[in-house]
Image (cartoon, rainbow, N blue to C red; front, side, top):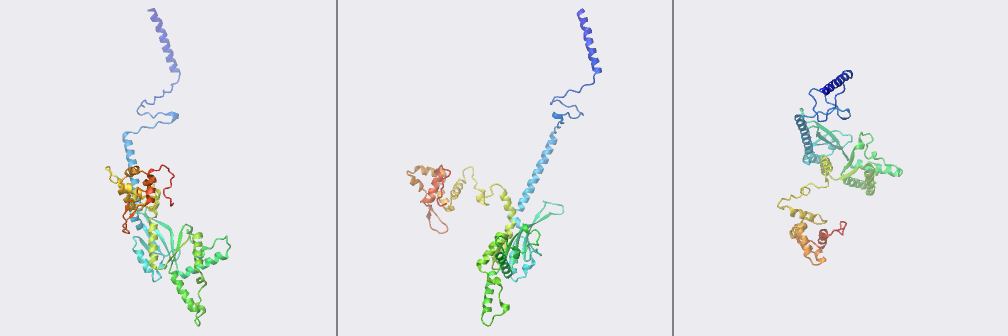
Length: 414
């Protein structure tokens, strides 16, 4: 009993001391919660490591909504990319082109022929004054958006190609002036190409690619030569009938001037005989310009060297093995100077590579292996005469099938 009384006052004294300390000392900071502890409702998020506030966890509904937004954005981007790719297809890209021709091209009587060829194209064309007289430029009208309330927005892009038609007489005079300029000038100086095509005063001429077209140059020179001979005949010579010095240019001098235009000015000159050929050239050039974005898109993708068509798409091989023979035949056709008929003849004789290897193993000598395929007949649909594979191709296929040297040259003619 006495022991219990001694313990009681001591415990009470310690409790009083604790209360005294609690009342005299300021309140301490709350202990940090564990990472997994729950935060009371209505309290702000506690600070994480380095004093950064902890992220609030998303509810399942918010995560699903964000995922749906992301999927909708990706779907819209794929749809826009597919629509843009459809516009670049060869069968549709020509409809986006517009050929802009200078009205001066209609002055000649034979211009109806090339306008008729131009009207047969599946594209727009217009006649409006150009910066260079008698020239043709191209515009591409690309839709800017898939759909708008007021209709599709069209974005017009100027192409860099410019085709200039030059009369034969004017062309010879300009070419003669060019030859005189770089003959009389020092060899290190650049010839003045503005004498052939005045581009000094044109804005943005450095970003353009120019080409010249001359229609009927040979006929003009023949007519002028005949007129010169008639003028030199006795009793018919007159000062007004004397030809200009440009007609004295030889073929070599003209070719030298064309080389100067190509090297110094990157200007190509095309000589045509009729207006029909001029129209065909404009048609081919329009189609090539229209397909440029499509080809550029193909080159940016993987394996741009693959050609379009069935060869690029490959042969479909079914689970039952259908199509393996076509794959084997095309592999043989990859050899140099091997026609489809020759590859088909070898594939028919040995329908698989394993059968060909088995035939090589059955041969007794090395020469017999090399000449195993040489006597296989090949049917030719062109000449109608049967021929054979030959020893050279037979040797190359044998070395390809059995050799382990990666640097071995199969074709000795290369």
